[in-house]
Length: 310
Image (cartoon, rainbow, N blue to C red; front, side):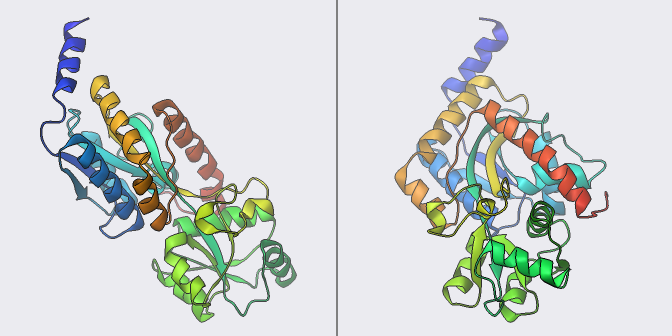
């Protein structure tokens, strides 16, 4: 064993012996923040050390990811990576201050979150096929609300129109206002994270007609996957755990082992389910390939959405 490998192995033996920071490139209270905090709490219990969530929101996750890239690779910084900053940002920023594929050590995915397509209940549609047929008959007169240009709800809708062969008029709102706009009848339909629409669906103010995961999920009962009508459609959000590049492998192995143990606990899965997320884990190699594929997938979608590269 080389001196370098011996030092790394020794570092892992006593690891962790102090609190760990989890960089969260999202604002406090966001759905990604909520899921990251579940993981931080569970990992902290397993390692017997506090994992402190450090929110560095802003610029679509760019600020937090750049800070994460520069962090010391000693195992005491973790990063909660997610869709916007890892998969979408490379297509809308000409000079990204980090490389999502090269600047981080990949550990594993820990959650996927379905988005749900909701319509105003007065709209005469009960299924995805109904919506597509109506949109085609109205030729671009239906309004699609989103949480703003380049948001998940915008790109999910653009991808659906492209794959489903229909058109709708894009109406951008600020964040959660898009859901309220559909409930109020200002817009006809929208695709939003499941937790943000569940209350209004239960209250009868919105009608859910499909979700964006590739197949049905116990999270959403009998709600069909949009892919049952539009084959191949898949637009879920995701979250995974990363570390700064150069973190010693024995420490990464220990972290990953702890993460697997945390995510396999039944009560962890139940908490994540209540937050509208499914627990999904994979190997570091699979996680990296997953993000590569996500980046490839979003290129044509961002182009079709007409987003200007900044």
